[in-house]
Amino acid sequence: MQRWRAPAMATVLASLLALLPLPSQAATKAETEAQFRNWLQTELWPEAQKTGIAADAFKSAFAGVKLNWDLPDLVLPGSKPAGDRKQSQAEFSSPGSYFSEKRLQGLAATGRSLAKTHAATLRRVEKTYGVPAGIVVAIWGRESGFGRAKIPHPIIDVLATKAFLSTRPELFRRELIAALHILDSKDVKEADMRGSWAGAMGQPQFLPSSFLEYAVDFDGDGRRDIWNSVPDTLGSIGHYLSKKGWQRGRDWGFEVYIPANISCAQEGPDLAKPISSWVSDGIERASGKAFPSGEARASGMMLVPAGRNGPEFIVTPNFYVIKEYNNSDLYALFIGNLADRISGGGGAFKGPWGDVGKMLRSDVAAMQRALEAKGYDVGGSDGLPGYKTRRALGDWQAKTGIEPTCFPDTSLKAKLR
Image (tube, rainbow, N blue to C red; front, side):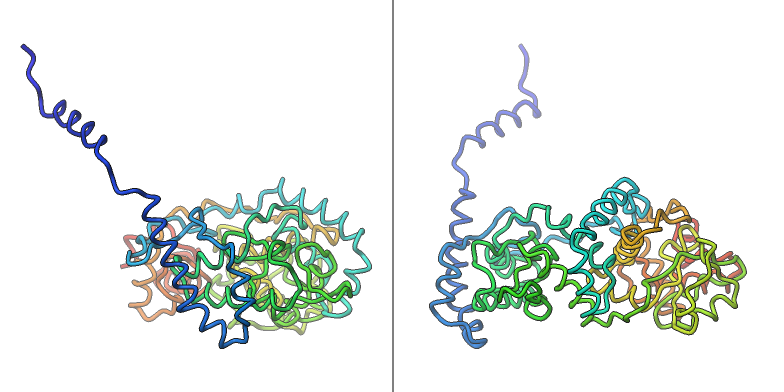
């Protein structure tokens, strides 16, 4: 006779347990919803009232609001956020795919067409704020597909959920109160106030606080409408960049060739010098053209986002203004490259992206800590190789007799301890 064996018995027990009543997920959500309604009244309302929001306006704004359980990075009250398991290096992991030629060509073609359609508005934006049409249109295209991307979420739902359940409640609470002031301004109705899962709104993808500070009524209808008005969208992008320090008349940057005898560890906005000095060092534009005469005496900065394993650049302060929109070197390069294509004459970067960014963040962080122990400023041991990490690594490589690459790779793990 066949005997019961432990695995079979375990399977039977598991099946029986599956039939027993379990705590309801809906009940847990219902309890959290009740806590949320209480939080709105006892915590958020007093804070909103102090900023000038009226009771009726507050009540109206939250009348139909519910927690959006489909949003990422939510933490139930009383529980701890999950540990950071993200080991990929985000923007550093696959720069080649970030600059998809098919995507850039498509955006550029549409951008050129729309730049012609809205030429009068873009001329007025440049005259008012000093920001070139190509840059404005490139950001418009990158952020919302020129206003054609689906922007699905009611913004009050998103911000209220994030303020109550996210890992960064203080940030989203500020943005939620800013959104209440937008409603109070009558610029937009709540039903039309839609954004991304992260709380960025409309065609330029402004957070509510940015809307209050930078959105403009550029079509003269008395409302700042970044959801439906192209002039308001383009004007608001220009105004944002202007307020962040855009230097009128200057480019964003230039792809260059850096000779092997010039250290790649001269990168960063704090090591700026006149572009004529970089030229004297032997740096040349990848296009073969001379730098514009107006740029010669102006400051420029070396940028090697993949070290010696990718395209190399001399960028202007305007590059860092673009980064105010999204704090990523690759994002700013994408915008600059797309803007050049839209304005005419631009194409793919001539330098190829090498096989970089394959290391785990924990390994890069270990390198950063080792460099810090040797006295280098790496900008923090977060596992992301920003410019301070890249140049510190290049300096260390040169001092130890290794040819500087200015980018972490697995061959350096055992050497850098």
